[in-house]
Amino acid sequence: MKAMILQQIGKPLAFVERDNPMPGPGELRIRVEACAVCRTDLHVIDGDLSDPRLPLVPGHEIVGIVEAVGHGTDNAKLGRRVGVPWLGHTCGTCSFCRMKAENLCDRPQFTGYTRDGGFATHVVADAAFAFDLDANADPISLAPLLCAGLIGWRSLKKAGDARRIGFFGFGAAAHILTQICIWQGREVYAFTRRGDCAAQQFALELGATWAGSSEENPPVPLDAAIIFAPVGDLVPSALKAVRKGGVVVCGGIYMSDLPSMPYAILWGERELVSVANLTRTDAEEFFPIARSAGVRTRTTAYPLERANDALADLRAGHLVGAAVLVPGAS
Image 1: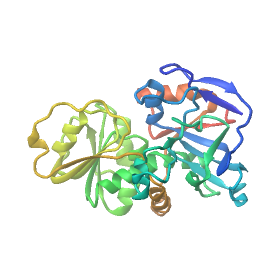
Image 2 (image 1 turned 180 degrees about the vertical axis):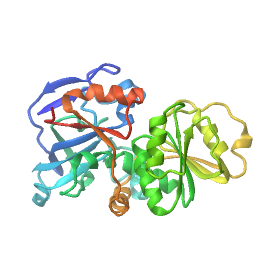
Image 3 (image 1 turned 90 degrees about the vertical axis):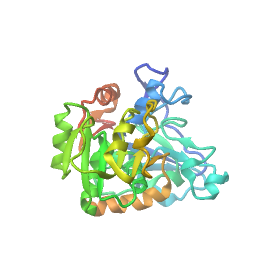
Image 4 (image 1 turned 180 degrees about the horizontal axis):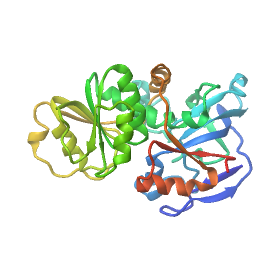
């Protein structure tokens, strides 16, 4: 197998060749067709998230074909297309797992963080955390759904039945959620970096009611806002944008420190909540909805060997939509 390896925090990934991994009991070996590049990958590589397993193959938005199964795994999975997300394994016995909050498991494993991920030609995954995907769909288009879509969906659920909803940071997750929200009959308000006309135009093309800078006020009070950009300074802006009783959801796994802010912008029974990881139930809900809503992802494909270029483009804000690594592409 070929893989892009993180050997040292803050350093570029190294291209290596290894023997193909062997699946253990309850596991699958998957030939990777595509793996999207997520901002969480940047947080792992740059050291914002502590103690990754090193050396590490990053990547947790994996689409591929099952080519081998471990002991005790259903042979019927051979040849199927599956998707592997960030949450790669849970203990099943802690208090959170028992109360069906496996996203908060005390002893989890995370794909591309504590176990090898999909920046490779092959990956081994827990069969219980590999979701069946449409065999006829484009794997490159499917890949961003495995995190941007799933975490976006969980964030949207936290926003409740908000009719007017704002997205702070219009990247991979927001462009997927915008399509779902429009299909659901909601109004979308897109907030981007100052001067990011391309992202604002993209949001409007997808059906957003308004698009502007995160420093601007929306034309109407919002019922809810979701912050995807990892910028703590956006929290006061989002709170100011929502009406009394509104909800602000922090959708990322990492965010810079929140600034001091006046209590008045939280008062009025506004809520500030975070989203942690995902559950398999989120996937069971999300994929049928994405199909019904006709979600189409905007992607830029890179060969596996150019993973560092894809990460650099994401870090610099040069992407519209999502970057996707494609093993075997040239």
